[in-house]
Length: 302
Image (tube, rainbow, N blue to C red; front, side, top):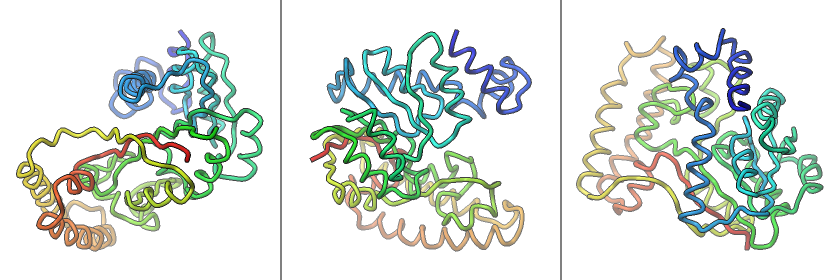
C-alpha cells in the first residue's frame, strides 16, 4: 500500500495526471522510479549471496537515498538504515514510501560536507554505506569519501555502483538523459543538449581507484556485470559500436552546428583512444573500460 501511495505522490510531483498514466503511458520514462523497490531487492539479494553480507542489526547509511527503496528493504531485513539526500522533494517521497513498513530517519544534508558529517555522526557509526548511482552526482567526491571514512566502523564496508561514461553503450545513449554522446562531454557543454540544472560528472575508473586508496578504502570485491566470454567477440563489438557512433555523428542528427562541433570534437578524442586500445589493451582491461556499463563492487575501510 505504501509503495502505491509513493507512486501516486511521485506522479503528482512530476505533474503526471494519475497513477494509471504513470505506469502506462510514462512507464518507460519513469521505469527507474517505478521499479526502485524491485531493483533494491535484487541488489541486496546479490550482496547477501555473492558477498555474504548479513543485514541483521547492521547500521547502514544510504547516501543519496532518493525515494528510500534501499533503506526500506534493508529495514525489512533487520538492518537499522539511515537515508540521506540533498533533496527535500525526494525525502518527502521516501517518507511516504516507508509509511506503515519501516520507521527510518530520512535526513536532508550534503554527505560530502563538514556540516553533513556532524549531522550524520549522531546516527552512527555505520557498518555499511550504500552509495548506489551516487558518486557520479557528487562534485566533492573527496569530501564524501573523507566523511565515509569517519562515519564507518573500522573495517566497515561501502557498496558502490557507478556508471561508466566510456562504455560504448553509454556513449550511444547516456543513461540519465538518454542523449547520444553526452557522457563524453565536459559538464560545461551539457546545457547545449539538456535543460539545467543537472549534476552529473563522468570520471574514469582510475580516478575512483586512486580516490578509494587515498582515503583508506580497499577494493575487495568487484561485482560488475558483463557477459563477455570471447576476446574476439569483445573487440568486434567495440569496433562495431565505434562504427555506429561514427555513423550517427552527422550534422543532421543535431539541433544546431554548435552541438555537432562539440560532439565531433569530443568523439575524435574518444575514438583515437579506443581504436588504439582495440589494438593494444589486454582483453580484461578492454572489457572493464568499454563493455562494463556500471562499475560495481565493495570497498573495505583499512
